[in-house]
Image (cartoon, rainbow, N blue to C red; front, side, top):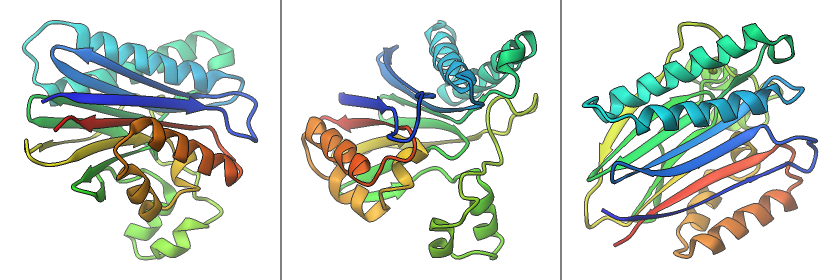
Length: 242
């Protein structure tokens, strides 16, 4: 299967630095997409997110017989170790952390790993599905029945995340995979919460249904900035060529 892709990462209108990072690479006849939203301030979040992009890419560039899902797990664990090692060696980097979305498309299968509150979506035949679940305090309260999804949208603690790379040595990673049918019209969308805090899923579904990726990217960026872009925003769009 063939794919085309487009990525964007922009500083929010209320931010001084962009601690998000994105990377899309063609490796071993597949597409590797990585998106991170760094945390920590003083540009430490930027270090954590960039370090994760580099580490995941390097792990995937090694030639071995490891299956793709195991390689994603290994790459995220190695990223976590690298963040903690660098934070321990440099006082200015103490407390740095990052979310991580890793998607690998190979042959007829999508493999992904997830930690944090950035997201991976699948648009299949114009229907949008969120593949990942936020590791956030608000999502936990929703799961436990203390909040409705509507209440969660405007909750004051919606930016508190429960898991991130750099938090501790034992990182918990969500891993999954899905087969892609040759006849399905498919797009994958990875994004930071700078996108999802201002654009609802119904709007996202309509925008992603457009065929031209440049047009989709411009529409998303313009809408986010029109709504104040309170956070940095980044996304990767990957479309299967029919």
